[in-house]
Length: 615
Image (cartoon, rainbow, N blue to C red; front, side, top):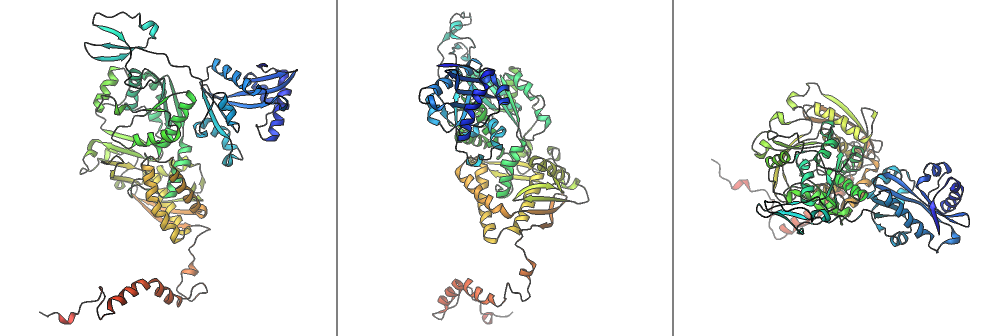
C-alpha cells in the first residue's frame, strides 16, 4: 500500500474523495484552499495513480490534535487502507511530539481497533468552543469522542535514602546513571524505590498562584518525581492575582502553564443557571466558591487529556468542602485519573509551615505571616475566612472588606438600576445590552458602591463541621432579587412554590460539588422549562445595603388588574367563593362535626367566661 504525505497534485483527488463522503454526511466538506493551506498535515493512500484514501491532522495546541477527514474509496473498502493510513498518521503524530490525538466519529469500533478509547467530548473544550458551538446539529450530535495517548512510558527512577537521617528524596537520574552514583561518606546509597505512592508521569495542578499551590509545585516534583503542569482559570479574580502568574509557576518548577479566560463560560453556563434555579445555601450563601470548582476541575481534566497526564492535583485541605467538589468532578469526567491532594499527605500543617517550605525551596510567594485572612475571589464574589473570623462572636473588622463599602459609608442618594431578562437570562443593564460576564461586572460595580451583598455566615460544611465566613456578593445579590421579582409576575402559584422547594435541594447539590450529576441536570431541565415566560424588566433601588423593588414588567405577566378587582367581572363571580370555601375546608368541618357529635366541643372551642370569678 502506497501511503505517503500529500502533494499539491493530490488536492483534486482528495477533494473528489471528500466530496463524495461529505454528501453522505460521513465527513465535513473541505475546500481546495483549506486543503492547500494545511497540506503538510495530510496523508494520502495512492493506488493505480488515484487517491483512494486520505486523512489529516488538525492541531488545536502543541499537545492536542484531531484526526479529521478520514475517507476511503468504496472500491477498496475492507482491504485495510483505513487502518493502515490511520496507523501511519499516529506514527507521524508521535514523531512530531503530539501527546494526544482525538476524533469525533460514528465508526467507534474502527478507531478502537487502532488503539483509541471512548471518552467524553467535554474533555476537548478546544474543539467544542472552536467548531462544535457553531454546528447546527450540536444538540443532536450522534458522533462519539475517542482519544489516544501517545506519551512514552515514564523512565524508571531510584530512591536515595540517607539512613542516618531517615530523609528520602527522589533522584532525577535514570537508573543507568544512578547505579554509578558514588556512595557518599555520610552513608547515602542506592536502593530500589519503595512504592509508597503511585508512580506518576505527569500531573495537572489547579493553580491559583497563592501560597498553597505555589508550594505544591516543588512538593509534587520532590515526592512524586513527576512533571507538573499548572492550570489557572481566570474567573474574574482580578488582574492583580493573575499578574506574573505564568512566570511564578515556572519559577516554582512547573514545566508548562495554562491560563484560560473562563469568565464568559462561568457566567453563562454556571452562574446564570444557578440563579435561575434560585439556589441559595442555608438561605443566605450565594455559592460563589462552590459553583466555581466544577468548572476549574472540568478544564483540569480536559488539559490532562490533551497533555497525556495521568494525574490531577488540587490545593484543598482535608477538612474543607473544596476537596469534595474537585474530586467529584474528576470522578464524573475521568475516573481513571489519579488524584493527588497534598494537604492529605504532607507534613505542612499551617501557613507558617508553608512559608518556611517556600523559603527553603526558593518559591516566590507574596504572602507573609501578617496576612491573616484566607480569601477566594471570582466574578461572583469575594470570600473571607480565618483571622478574627475564627471567633464568630467577634464583629468583622472593616479593613477586611476589599470589594464593597460599608452601608454606612454608601452614598446618601439612592440609585435605580434596570435589568432586562429574556427567558430568565439577564441581557441588559440600564438599557445597555451586555454579554453575561459584563452584566455581572457592571452590577458588582453598582452594588459594591452602595454596600450591597455583605453576608456574615456560620455555615454547615459538607464534612460535618461548622465554619464562619464573610462573603461579598454585590452583583449576585442584585441579580437574585431582580430575577425573583420577575418570576412573581410570570409563574403561577403551584409552579413557583414547587420551584422554591427544589431550590433548596439544588443549592445543596452545588454546595456538595455534585454539579455533574443526573439529578442536577434533571432539575435544571425543570428550571429551564419554568423560565420560558420569564421575560421582561425589573427596576431596583440601591440604597445603603438595601435592594428595594422599584417596578417590574413582563409581556407574559399573570397579574391582571381586571382579574384582581373586587368589582363584579365576567372572569370572577364573588358568589363562587362560597362553594370553593366549603370544599376547601371540608376536612376541617368533618373533624369538628365528629368531635361535637356526642355532645362534646371542638378542641378549639372558646372557654366559658361566665365561670370565671371577678375581682
